[in-house]
Every structure is written in C-alpha cells, then in structure tokens.
Image 1 (cartoon, helix red, strand yellow):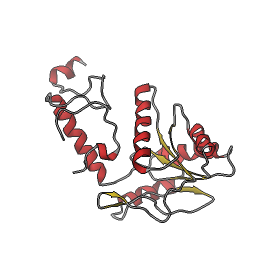
Image 2 (cartoon, helix red, strand yellow):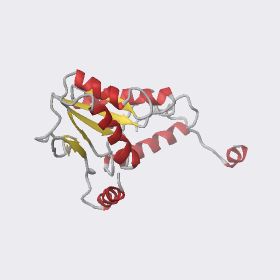
Image 3 (cartoon, rainbow, N blue to C red):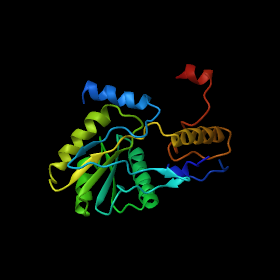
Image 4 (cartoon, rainbow, N blue to C red):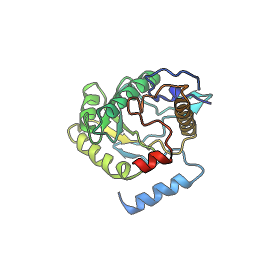
Length: 218
C-alpha cells in the first residue's frame, strides 16, 4: 500500500509507528458515474491538450503533451481564515514541485492570499506562457465549474499573451483510497498513544476518542 508521504500529504511531526450551467453539471456527474472516468472535463482557452498525468509501475509516466518548461502550474484550494490551514498548501506545493520537477509551481487560494490572480502573475513573471490551474478539490462542485473559471479568466485579462487550462479536480482516483485508509489508521494509532498528531490537526486536540458523556456536554 502506498504511504501518505508518497502522495505529498504533509507530515511535519514524526510517527512513533510505521504505518456553469445545468447541462454542464449533468454531464460532469454523468462522467463521474462512468467506469471509464479518469479525469473530468477541462476548461481551456487558445489551445487543446490531452491528459498529462498517468501512473505506471507505481511512478509517474510521461505523456507527449506533458508539462513543459514554459508552463506554470497553480495549485488552488478554497482558502481559510485559519492561517495554519493556508500554510499547509505551501508545504504541499513545495513537495509537489520537488517530486514533479516542474520549474514553475505556485499556490493560490480562492478566499485568501495569494489569490489566483497573484499566482497567475507570478507564473507569467517567471516565464510561463501557458498556465495550468489545478484545483485541490475532490469533486467538481460549484467552485470548479463556476468560481475558479471566473477568477482565472479575470487573472488572465492582465496577461493576453498567456493561455490557460483548468484541470479536473482529484476525483475518483484509486490512490485516494490509500490516503483515506492511511489517515484513518494514523488517527487510530494516535488515539491509542502510538503516534503523534499529524500535521492536519497538530495543536487542535481534535483527534481524540469521544463518548456519550462528551456528546452530552457539547
């Protein structure tokens, strides 16, 4: 089973044990139900491209239309009023940049800084003439089919020489099963006293076993 670290989930504390319209919406969910679903529809301007990510023998497989040196990648999440949550995206982006080898990778938040406009500008400033916006979301909800496209289009107006694409969200990928299972096992190990808190809930004291008494008190 693939470990959570190999899937770029930040782990800053050591473990003690190993371990836009209605039609568009309907077509999106229909594709998710299909057994052939791999990645959802992409929103694209000025060019067309095929999927650039695949897995082969446990590693990344290069496709002819992959990320090039003139491409900038923006990984965007929702954003939070909690500073620590926003900083975790920076950790993920650093891990993604190192693992992928892509020269231009920037973080962005929908509701915090840096914004999509900020990240788009940085990509172009660093030499990108194509920007790949990758949503750090599980499923194609409103943020994917409406909000992110609007924010990206607004950012692109300042850079008419750059094209962009908005990729599918994470979706139904079998490796996410391993992520979920790893997270469950880690939390159970923490409750049993065999593992420290993970980076996601460090300092929150949220990862604990609740009982009926706790529910009544709340």
